Image (tube, rainbow, N blue to C red):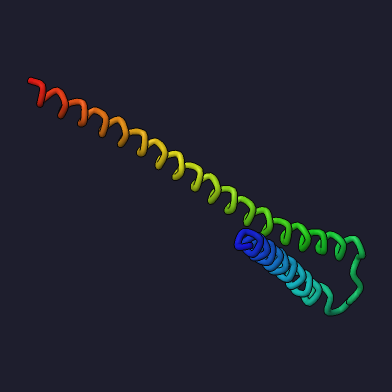
Length: 109
């Protein structure tokens, strides 16, 4: 259940980041359309608008990609931490065995 909630929270976060990117892209389009270039002649080329909408879409996707990279890095960090913990556990077992071995041999001498 907690895993499902965590997954939904991640999906919500990704959607919010993508929405933020799309909003920024649309804001860029608004800024472009209100530049002095259009004060005297307010006509625009459809291709210009479509290109800028594509830029907005790409910006939204980029935010999603960045989030995915952060998640991947976090998963890699978790895997590294787990591997280090496992290695430390092995080292502790060997040290404990060695110390017990030394203790047994000291009492036999």
